[in-house]
Length: 184
Image 1 (cartoon, helix red, strand yellow):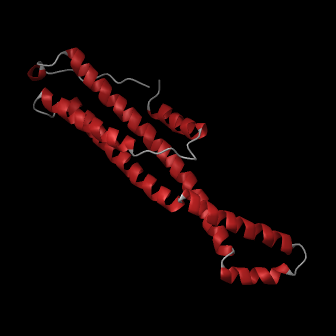
Image 2 (cartoon, one colour):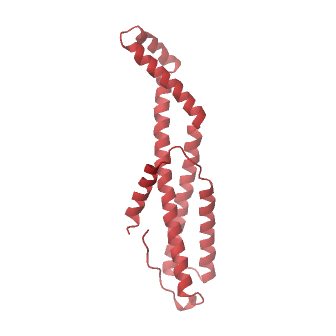
Image 3 (cartoon, rainbow, N blue to C red):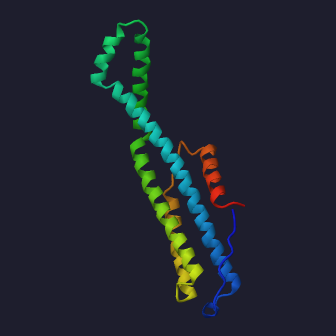
């Protein structure tokens, strides 16, 4: 993770030591980093769930009753009998996957979480800007604002669930995107 030099204190804010100010800045920056990481993981997971859902809907559509009638016509043609058996079998698997994995619910849940992390990221960046320009009247306001941000991060993180698609590859994708934003 990269480090950004914290803004210097102005005399009116001298009731906080440089060490405390630097710690507040570092913790804010670390929270931004963690927020980006969760956001990037959610984007990658959501992309995988949406891809699986699209394939599943496609297979279900072509094996639906209207399409099945067309399949019966192909049934008697050489070679198509086996293709149709495979397609119909995939349709049955897709129904089972949808029922077991609750794909639509997962997509909705992760979309909501992604929105939460994006909103949090924006607010952290705004807070960092406030720290840079010393926009808040007292040091206590900075500490209070940081604690609110940290609480929001904790609540959003607590909503994350174990996920079938959360592989090392997804984590590597998120980390590589972070490495671009936060070069070492």
